[in-house]
Image (cartoon, rainbow, N blue to C red; front, side):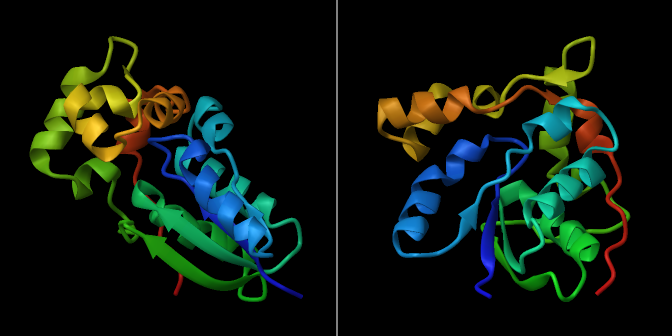
Amino acid sequence: MQARLLLVHSPLIGCESWEPIATDLAAEGYAVAVPDLSSAIAAGPPYHLRQASMIADSAAGRPVILVGHSRAGWLPATAGTMLGKKGVRGYVFVDARLPVPGRSWMQTSRPDLAVRLREMADPQGWLPPWPQWWGAGELAALLPDPAVRRHFAAGCPRLPLAMFEEVHPPVPG
């Protein structure tokens, strides 16, 4: 049975970030799924385990190759533990941070970014969507096409600061 590619987006951005790649891979005959993690974030803590569980559920009983992008690098490891050795054929990390068990996102970030995020949080502890963390010029440099940039930005959720403070669990192996 061919393994399904599970393309895991960073929780900081939407699943739309994988759309062009998922379309190209599907056109080449690959089985591809892109789980949308936004409802796991909206459901509240534990953020890490909810997101990993949603990824594992997306396997739907098929062997998978877990592909994590950016700040989703730590999610495939936990989802893989949930799926077991027979459920995971491999891992691919695309410009992704590897998991650091026992540490939070804030503890593995640059100290100036952690301070900046805490300052950006509203009184209820919510951060603006990721594209608003940076200047318009920086996002335009990453995504020069205005239509692509608008589509990308529209898929980026507001995020709870608590998600960044949550300590990542140990991941066997």
